[in-house]
Amino acid sequence: DPVNVKILNDMLTDAGYYVEFSHNDSKLFSTMHLGKQPDVVLLDTILPGTSAFHVCEKIRKDYSLYELPIIIITSKHRTQEIVTAFRMGANDYLSKPFNKDELIARISNLIALKKSVQEHNEFIMLKHELRLAHEIHSSVVIQDIPKIKNINIAYAYIPTREMGGDFYDVIKIDEDRTGIMIADVTGHGIPAALVCAMLKMAFINNLEYAHHPAHLLTALNKDLSNTIKENYITAAYALIDTKNKTLTVSSAGHWPPLLIQKNGTIYNNWPKGFPIGWVEDNKYEESTTTYTTGDKFLLYTDGIIEARNPDNKIFSFERLEDYIIHNYLTEPQSFINDLINSLYTWGKMDKSDSFNDDVTIILAEFS
Image (tube, rainbow, N blue to C red; front, side, top):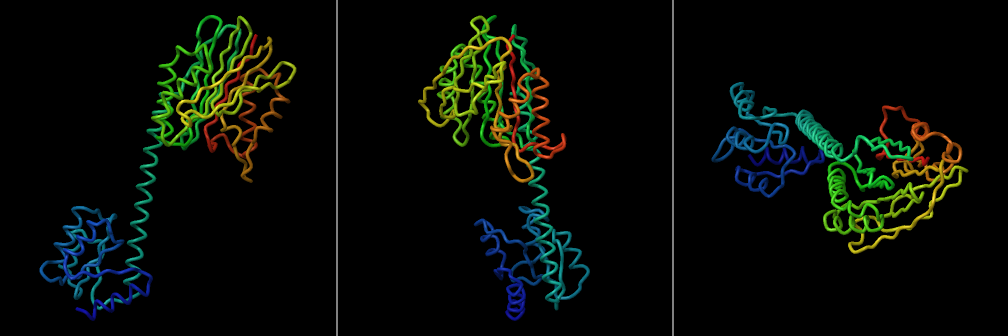
C-alpha cells in the first residue's frame, strides 16, 4: 500500500533512519548480497508473490536473531500470525495501525540489543585472542636462568594483560662466556606473540654467533626482516667474559644496557643501531669495556621507562637513573623488587593492576 509505505517512511526518516523499501524479496536479498546489511528488517505479512514468513525463514538461514533483527507487521492482532512469525525467526511484531513512538522504540531497542551482542562477541573473541597470545608467549619466555659462575643474575618479567612482545634469554656459551639477550616486539596480542616466537627460533638458529654480539644481531635482522612486515624489534645482546672481565654489547634500537659500577657511576656508551626489521641488510656494531668485581649490569625494556601515572606522565629514563643512584649497592633481586614497587607507586597502582606494557628486567652482579 503506497500510503502506508509513505507514512512508514516519514516516521522513520523523521527519527533519523535511512530507509529502503522493496516490494519483493529479490531486491532485499540482492542488496544484502552486495554487503549492504540493514540494521533492522520490517516485513509486512502481505507481500506480492511470497510471504513474510518465508522471507523471514530465508533470512534466518544466513543471519541469527541478533545479527539481523526482524519486525513483522501484521494487518491486525492475529495470534496465529504472530506465533508463526516468531517460529520463523522474527524478533518482534507490530499490528496496524501502529503508533510512531512504539515503532521507533521497538526499532531502537532491537538495534541496541544487536550492538550489545556484537560488543559481547567482540569481547569474547578478544579474550580468546589474549589467551592464545599468552599461550604462544609463555612458550617463548624462559622459566629458569642457568647458574653462572662469578655472576649473580636476577630477573623479573611482568606481562601486560594485553600481551606485549618482550623476549629475553640467558645462555651459557662456555665456562667463561655468557650471553644475555633482551628484546621488545612492537604491538600487542597475537601478532606480537607470533613475532616473539619467530625471534626465539631465529635466536636459537643463530647461536653460532653467540660469542659475537654484532654478528648475532646482524643475522637475526637478516632472517626476520622479510617476515615481520607490520612489526619491528628493538634488541640488545651482551657477551660477558668472566675470564677477561669484559662486557661486549650490540644494540638494535633498544634502550641502552647500563653498566653500574660499584662506585655508582653508570656507563652506557654502546653503539646504536636500527631496530630489527627496519633495514634488511643492516650491519650492527659492538663495543667492549671492562668491569670489576661488584659492578652490576642492567638490561630492561621500555615497559619501565614508559610506565604511566594517573597524570599520564611516564616514569622516564631519568627516574630510572635516579633510582639506580640511590639503590646501586642493593643486591640484585631486592634491587629489581624495589624497582617494580617504585613503578607501582609511580602509577598509584595495586599489585593486581596491569602495566600498559610488558616489564622485563635483568640484573647481573659480577663477583
